Length: 426
Image (cartoon, rainbow, N blue to C red; front, side, top):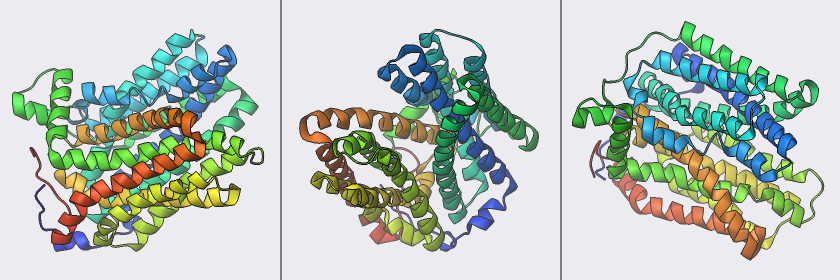
């Protein structure tokens, strides 16, 4: 990694008001927030339907996670389309596809395997239109405004997921599962129409993305696989992706044990829901405070300490604390996720300009996939060392990740005030 100097203007601190004053970002931000709410509503409702039809906890869990696990494959096989297709048609088409899937589940009685297949196919396409949207945000917001734009998306994502999950339970109770899915489809349709009507017509980033530049234009799958290979072979991009993938995966492993931990400690009924809500609340507070109060260099200097904060509180679960202490530990853990704000600009600077859409899609899909793997790994560990021990193990892994980041990130920051890497190669 080759450190480069940071322009003085990049030290300027933006405000959330300035970010929201950009109308095109405001459109993508609002439709994405509504779509996340619709997705949480659809996922919850679909999981309820599967459990009601089969009585299987395993199939119900699979229904909950099927929208996440295939995303990495979609990014690897189709990710180049985020740079090769017109973004307005791509984003609107993505929301329309989500709408069609929810409507199909609501109106057509399909075998469980077929309905799971529908959800998996939609998940394959998610990184493509998600990557296109992220590329536009990076194009329209510059300097610290881009970082705060990512912060706003993080805050809205956490809030919308909480609201969508809560809304799912209420809507299913009042309207029934199939009408709840229809409501989810209506929300997606609104997002698709808003993007189609209000987003300007824009051209693709380039005709071929990074793989097209290297090998000439080709099929989407070949271009996507080759482009992903180029991105991951670049040392700066690979390290910055791993830094954003690993801590959330370890924390998700601990999060997946909260219900079992609360039950094993005989907490009051329903207390597990309070504990599960502490993580996103901590994330909301952390993103808002770190994004609003700290200048860009300070955020980037705090990457390593905040990464460590995602893991250190979890180590405390080795002592099997009670309800109050457990809640505080999880709040602190969530606050540590603000470390990601200090990595946003270095990550953007390390990307090739004609492969940003694919890179953002790969970043998101890889994170989703590893967050699905984390609970499986640490759930298996809990069988041998107990839930508290497994949660502490997950925290220790996050702290080790902070130490790994320190070996390359903090040293470069000391020299330049910022980490940047070559746009390609190692």
